[in-house]
Length: 126
Image 1: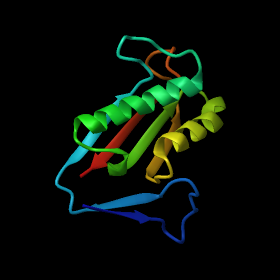
Image 2 (image 1 turned 120 degrees about the horizontal axis):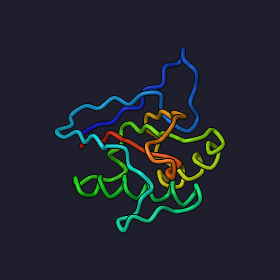
Image 3 (image 1 turned 135 degrees about the vertical axis):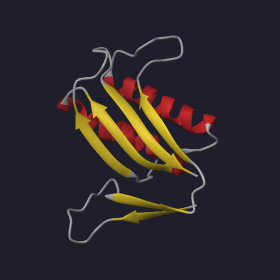
């Protein structure tokens, strides 16, 4: 499988992500439902950074269950409950991705459970 970043020169630059990702030669595509900041025991961290790390941990768990890693991510959509979390989210996202760049969208929206400060959905290919 090959992943090719696409960043059109006549569109705005995106310094921390790719504007598009082309996938070729993939035999499997994994669509990961929105992963929430809830632990297996039902616990929900109190602060944003810990919620973000837990949501990413849940994304990684879904990837692993399909025999994939973060290297297989193609597209990530982040739903934030409030704009005030953008800077903290960028920091925890960069921590989780470890320098990987994917196609990325961030949406500020109401979230299903008011205790959740974010939700992360993703698409991966292998």
